[in-house]
Length: 387
Ligand code: PLP
Image (cartoon, rainbow, N blue to C red; front, side, top):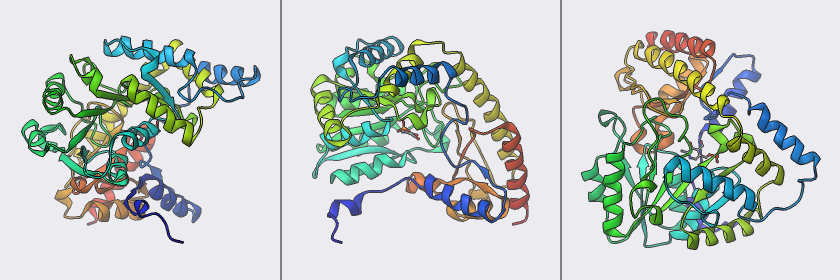
């Protein structure tokens, strides 16, 4: 088959490959602790499930408008207005199946050959994959452990050229757990306003934060007009399998993104939109409980990792990933990830799954019980001590 050449530029996410390898070992009778997949292990709150079931029973089984129902767009507009302290109207909101399509649609709408887009590395792999897919040049900015996994403003400035069209930011971040401050946002805003650059602000972990408040670049004067804000229900409400997310962006771009959605998937599932509305409007207790549970697990995993010879781990400020440096073990990230799966029965991801600058690191998702985390730490320690 002769595929279109653009397909050779499209990357992927390795978490699903590692999951498949781990499942194959389980099929042979091995016990594996799963720390590879990035999703809350909690159930969707029951009142949200009830809203979805009620919607199905009351006939919400038909097509919906491509950008989401007016009711859902209004709920999202009000929620983002309140949490980011900006003024969002429903026509700026496009509701999509998960946060991911916002990356696909906005990059497709904005980028082409000759453009450059700057993205975090180590970072969520879909940014690099999608920039390459559009034909634009993917320019990484390095996130360093010494810098708390925040970017260096001078380095970022040095990457900007007259061709730079987009800068991607992700806070709280996957895979590092790093969180950007208002002064970080101001530095990016200054670069973008001066050079007429758009920002894709991936705020999917906005509610999973352990210290201080989430800050959004959209709150800086002049930046809402230049920003695509991505958020959604997957992480906040433990709704990964429902596929529900959204983007908030200038109306002109929202219309184009809606057209892409019409071409790709038509619309969101009707009952999902009803459940998603209830998630935002209903009680938030489950969100707070989940974040408190993640905080306890974070402390267990970080302390345990720092006790393993050759491992060094910062305390993540948000999301639910630990990103230890393992250079002290003398192994590469990929070797260590394979070794831990086979030797310790613990599935983790190599830092290089998140870009070349992830070499020397592993990503462990702590969206798992304290009992499993302790088991994983014990097994990792024993395996590393054998080296
Ligand atoms: N952005 C980041 C940084 C993520 O980590 C993820 C999921 O892991 C997504 C976007 C996509 O989320 P969704 O499952 O809602 O498409």
